[in-house]
Image (cartoon, rainbow, N blue to C red):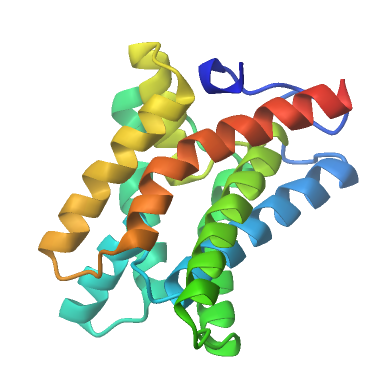
Length: 215
């Protein structure tokens, strides 16, 4: 079923060409909507204080060492990851640029505005909700087909190289990044594990459901 999905489906609002500089309004809307959800969901995991998402663990570790905000570090890391695309023969699109900017901005805005819940149960629910929202946001903007973000481009590029299911590839990336982030001083916790093991299936489910509902 959805855990075995290996390709990004196309729907009515998907761009016909990845490198489309003049996409339909609906395509641009869903691209931005998906990225806003992604940044918002990732920020919820941070705010829960149960451990950051793997990429944010690394961003936090670098932030601690450099004094820069998590949003700024996320922007820098995204640019560095983008440079790895050369080896995977991936090409950036309009969505790639939007990804780098929107997610970094949403992280800083959401972290500044939403307080951490007082009870452990509410923190746990916030972290779980954050992971699910990131999965939904990823599915929406990937289907827009205007180019994946740096991290998702790494995922799709490795998937093409290995021919492994998307869920497996994403889980491998998230676990690897979390390990590096922890070494740099980032915070690990149950929220990190929820993200590392849950984001792959959530993205795959999002892709599957959108494909079924729109086709």
